[in-house]
Image 1 (tube, helix red, strand yellow):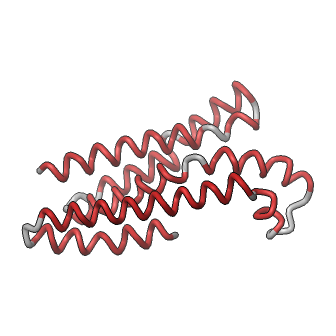
Image 2: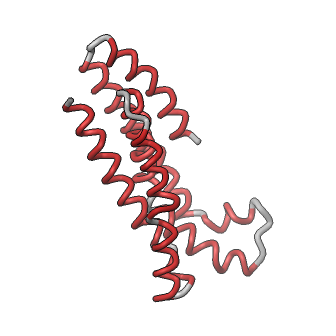
Length: 155
């Protein structure tokens, strides 16, 4: 949610400055929002790495849920920084006039790459290995969004 807020806040700032031809303000907005988003993602990663059991117990998790959830949360949390940057890049590129990047990056993260990877890793290594699909899908979406942002900024 904080990443969506940052991205939605950056979108009009980028759009207004794009229309006004103020490239330096666009670059500064990118630096600030991506930096803050990455920091929030890192904070989330640290919380999920260090206290997954406490987080799950907030929802009255039983022993079975803890057995599955603690390692899953630790594995998935490593991708939070990439997810944050991907989401914010998508919003920034939307502010530069290309809303498709945000939609495609989200589809890569949550559907196009994630679902097949979960299936393949689940078949190959079982339930404990399939959580690494989040790393793969987030990395693919991150690369797509970062390359798209770089192209948009050089236009």
